[in-house]
Length: 278
Image 1 (cartoon, rainbow, N blue to C red):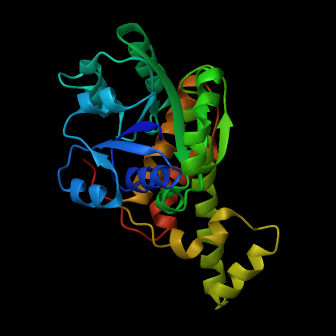
Image 2: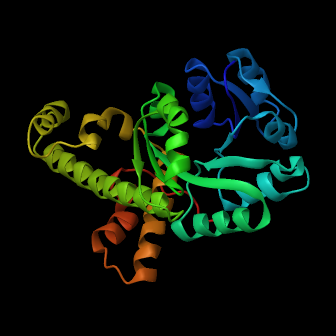
């Protein structure tokens, strides 16, 4: 009999991840706050339930959370009718949401103090394309023993898993580091291509040069996709992480001037209109 894993949050990232868990032989017990998700998820073979309590009851050992932020994680765990309403014991919540390190640590302590659940921090990188292909990079922290026991799930949705120690929140720091380097690199590639355009150099030939030279990077190799990122979606998410990285630097007195500059120049470099401030 295949293991049952709970999955909360079947959005742009969560849905393909859940499908890859199915492909790996797991039964996925799914829940999403938006009813419109249900027909597509059920058609894909996901066992969709109406309540979070059912997710906690039916999952064997682990529940993946792929909701947006701290508030949503607190809601799905602690609210009336949340996961704790099933009084689960000795199960693990795998938080794959993107939070800042301190907030993730705060969530872990709240779970530890107020429930019989374990919590593992497992931030992901690779975007929607990586989620669909099952090639996400997964950054983990928390109990090493528990992380190792969950490896089959990570293998189903990703191609690389990294462990950053027992302190929950460390994997969020690792993700911020990755994304601040991504943001800096995007600015650099965009600026280089602008200079090339001034000299009427064919953009494709400049990119071909970079791919086989010292200017190569993931951004260069995926520029056709990266250049289409919009201010409402991927660029907005990246900017949020760049600002979070900057704030961590301020908090811990770590100087990161290139990160600060890339934060302010990201939309200009990518020639995208900034979203209105909320």
